[in-house]
Image (cartoon, rainbow, N blue to C red; front, top):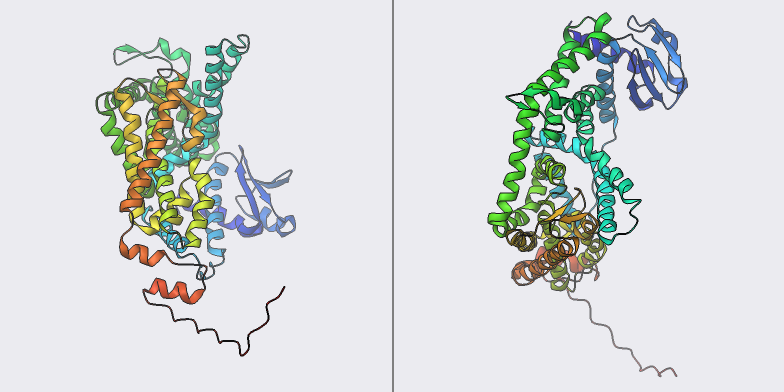
Length: 512
């Protein structure tokens, strides 16, 4: 039996004795113990558990702790977590059959979303999802620090609170100074290693002492390689750690594995990854600047127009490390304000759909409820509930995004950069995070102009070219008129006429 099979067998033996997967609320481990959160302590069979050869004892504290010993516990815990996840999926009740909805578009949107999710289960897209899982947890800190940085810049420009602004600068910059450590921690966690070891290796990149190291004929600088270097260093650490878990004796695991992981990964990081990742990071920043300076309008048009399809395919996740690299290098990402124009085109298209379908109360109610979120940059309700199921309005929404992106890109060609100090928000929610190279007022004005351009272009394109005669005939029906009318309209037939009212036998006197 291989080592992996042995560890899985231990995990499989423990699981039923602690009440099964449904009784587990949390799984963690320390140096020697598997720590479990339990829903019902009475389901645990202590004596049978202690009788297992791999179990050295049990301890009750705030969690139920099973002593497995150093080395063993680090190998058994991932297998135990996998078994719990598999069991919960297997035990989940089948979803009840969907009942027909009065709003056909909502059902079509849900079907499209499910189909897209199924198509996204490719190795490349799963890899991109892993990358997103590394960076998405960092977004709240990026947003908070970005807003504080913007507030601090405003106070400095106004000359207000000079004693406070240095403190605000420290608060806003502290996270970005150590972002590589957080990326390393999340990377190791996502790829199945020990998170703190990933963070420890990534910390080398931002350690001031690397300035005394020469590599490839040049002196390293703290932060060289940035988040890309941290990502590569942590992935390497995971593979070194897994190799050690496979070959290092369990009795030496707690000493040898972390030491070799940090040492090997650290040396490769210092004498290889920092240089390579630094060159790649610099190339990304230089290319983004060159693209917007020399082809800003065209590049903005293409990026703004293609972003909604990229989101649909899940490929937008590949841009997250690029955004983060630009923020780390320049203080803001010049790509996000352009990509945010896709949401503006979506809003404009939805408003045109609202006017083109005056009789369809169902769609109009959906649009009215989803528009406020759309203005704030949350476009999923409009995408999956309105434009995508309709088909052509989704394309015209992309046209609106293209014109909005082209507007912002044009000003980059004219010498004004518009950037965002964080990733995540878009639409109106991006205003507090805007930054640029020509002052906040001009930056805000250009971004607002881009939004208005996206709204207008999306509206015009959808109103005049977003509907054919057949689409109007199918959807411009009174959805509140009753089931016969709606079913007949969707089937393309004429609803049966309502019986004529019978005349009263005698006229009734008018009421005063």
